[in-house]
Image (cartoon, rainbow, N blue to C red; front, side, top):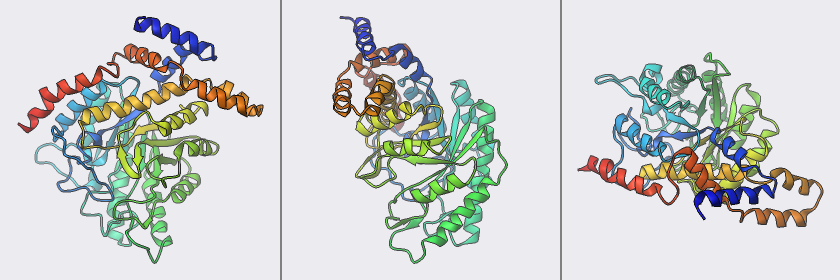
Length: 420
């Protein structure tokens, strides 16, 4: 059988389960997913020299790392050519691009410092999401930023957050697509603190001050992201899950953002997605792959990745959940890491859309639990691979067996020559 014949056969099999594969493919093509710029250069950015700080660590030294904005955009372009589906661009503030001889600190960055990113995104019909960068900076005092007891430190980072609100508005106006602006800090303590509430009150007031900057709520979607711990802040994190969920719930227009690496190992975000959608009009999601801890491995087509996508789809949440990738691996080819993670999430979304969700819900509601188990297991062996291959072909990207050859060719012809 040819690939086309296998796809037509798969369509018939899925149809016997009540699944319209053509509709699933069309729907998946229109679900935007934000691609994070920081995989391409190990979260280095362009506004500072020195190591990563703030509980973030990148491991590995694979050759060919992008060192300039031009190289990063070139690598991202190659990665985009290997990814099916609709993309957005996700930037950190430390990726501001300055003209020769120009520099301003993070509290004074302006839209003009991201004009080249806007041009890049517009040429590719991509929206832009944004993240203030509250790490890797000498104004991180004693490991604290927005929660610092030092007023001058807090003011610097509040001003940075306000500047990022203005830049987010600029992104949305220029691209015509909403900008999700995510506030996350690594603030916390290595060992047991004497005061847990004080830092959180300062953090709350600081975020409120950032959000006092005027913005259009239809264009800018501010989020607060939680974390259970970070490197060097193992005992206490200011922005815990309870804090961020409560903040978002009590501040109109602010969304909770869940990163599935930011919880205890026995917690799963797939179960949290439908819980939050009961209460929040919109939520945001950072998709990663933790191994034992928030280690930000490349996203794979694994069980929890599939479960998260299933919950978004069967909760009718594609228009309510802002999806973005967030991982960084310096031990493998960075273009491949980008492409593999994006393709894995696309697979998970398409699988969820090719699942007979309504039929399975009906079995649950009728308490036909034995039959539900049988059907859920049967669905796992449906010929999804043939549907995925057709999806890639329609999107004009290589198949799973073909895309690495493109990566290797690019590595040999472009990336390795950077180190020559």
